[in-house]
Each structure stands twice: as structure tokens, then as C-alpha cells.
Length: 67
Image 1 (cartoon, rainbow, N blue to C red):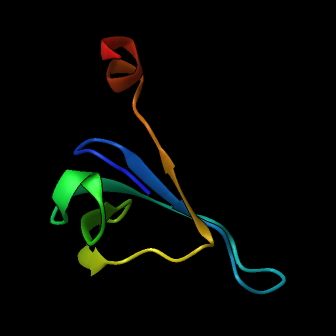
Image 2 (image 1 turned 60 degrees about the horizontal axis):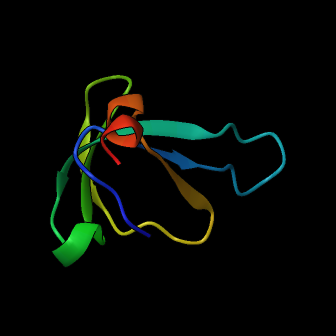
């Protein structure tokens, strides 16, 4: 998993009825874009996360254009 500041992390709900969560990656703490990541959720709360297999990095459009 590789992410950059400004990308979004989508975490799928683990149980029936639990909604997916989306948070902005505000800091990448691992080498080469690897976890852990500092995230800011939609309510403005920040947390430190090492995502599991239920998470997907959504790269921002401007990152895709630079490649």
C-alpha cells in the first residue's frame, strides 16, 4: 500500500450495516508512502492508522496527472 499526502483512505465496513469510512491522509509516516498514516475524518478528528486489508487508498486527481 502506497499513499501520499492529500490522498484518501477508504475503509470498508466490517459488519453488515456498518458504513464505509473515508478520511484524508494528512501525513505519511512510513518510508516510501507506506503506513502508518495520520488521517483526518469528515468531522475533523485526526488519528494515526496502520490500515488493514479492508482499506483502499484513493489517489487524488492531481497525483494521477503528475505520473
